[in-house]
Image (cartoon, rainbow, N blue to C red):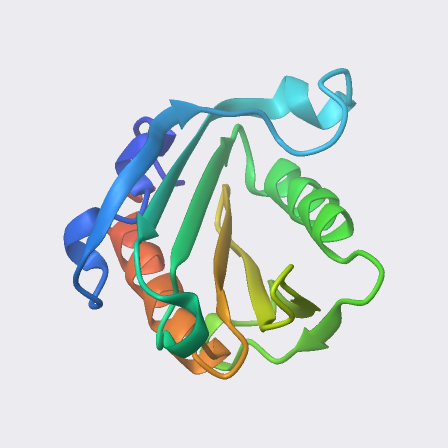
Length: 170
């Protein structure tokens, strides 16, 4: 099982390969998405979230401009499987296209949504959710449509998973 506080498993600023990011929120404690009174929240050992932002001209920007990483440690792998489904159901909203997560494994999900900004420039949001033993992760990357791709986001998810494996005890 993944051990320690959830914040120890968050994406670190030094792990972001694109320069110019700053931390704008967190790391801070967080509950699972949805109702705080949900039975699955009783199984939550700890949760943490961090938001990074990079200031760049949106019109011609390449790469993600905002990253939000959330990690929830559950008391068991079974509880994590239930929490995974809950997080995916919150992320898989109308106008979301489901994508393959490839190497993240069978307990993973990715979705993409696009919408125009107020200036009419297409924006994109990629959401990746995956489970590592008793740990559920959600990584959200936002940027200009065409400037950020799922192929840019998945290596960050793999880096987070590698950190969790280091914090795993049997």
